[in-house]
Every structure is written in C-alpha cells, then in structure tokens.
Image (cartoon, rainbow, N blue to C red):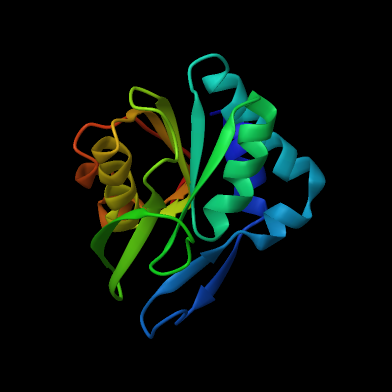
Length: 175
C-alpha cells in the first residue's frame, strides 16, 4: 500500500452516521466503486500483491463481492462468494459471528475449492473483525489455506486486526 493509494481511497469514501444502527459510523465506499480510476487502483494493488500466490478469491457479501470478483478476474483465478444464511443453493458450511451491532450467520459452499487451495479473503472494511474471522474459519474448515486477508478500510479503534489470530491482513486505508 502506498500513501497515494491511501489518499485516493480516503478521498472516495463517505461517512454515513447511524447506519445500519444508531451509533455506527458506516464507511461507504460506493463512491470509490463509481470512480473507474480509484476502483482499478484498488484491484491492481491487490492483484500485484497476490499474483501467482492464490488459487481462489473469497468475497464477503455484499461489498466484498465487488472487489473480490474484480480481483479474481485480474488474477485469473476463481471467485467464491460467502453469503448470508439461506442464500446459497448447494450444500453449505456455516458460521455464526458477532458484529458491532448484532449477530449474523454466513455460509460458503462446501465444494467451493479443493482442499489445500491458497485463498485470498476480501471485504470492504474490517471493524470488529467478526465477519472476517468467521469467513477465515469457514475457509480453513474446508481445507483452504489463508494466503491473505485484504480490506479497503481498517477501523483501527475497533480492534479487528487482533481478532484475526495472526492471519496476514492488508488494509489500504487505516482510519
């Protein structure tokens, strides 16, 4: 990550107070997605870091789908969605986790990748880390190896990095 990329990402975020619950300051990155230069910079930066090092990219519903699928394409590897409970049609593995504003359950297809696959996990933001930890746990339960965890924004004050248990995390912008 470079200072210029962090500056670009920062300039394309907007804060939405009290969303999705009172007291939560939501970091909206849809303006970044709408800017082709900024979106390409995010994808290109991540792809450069992982080229030849991953077999699949896992993206977390819903914003992780956007950057994850684009990154998988840039890397020439498959994309695997992690979705909210009940949204995937085939046999799934699930994990429940805590958010800063409640609890949720996510799922992944049991046949999403071969055991031993090197997997890059992607999402837009790490806050408390609950969603990313649950996703990494699912990948590992299926025999995948976490090659890295990538987020656009890390909200440092919420301590999510510490919950990852030493899994490698790269964030493009620390707030």
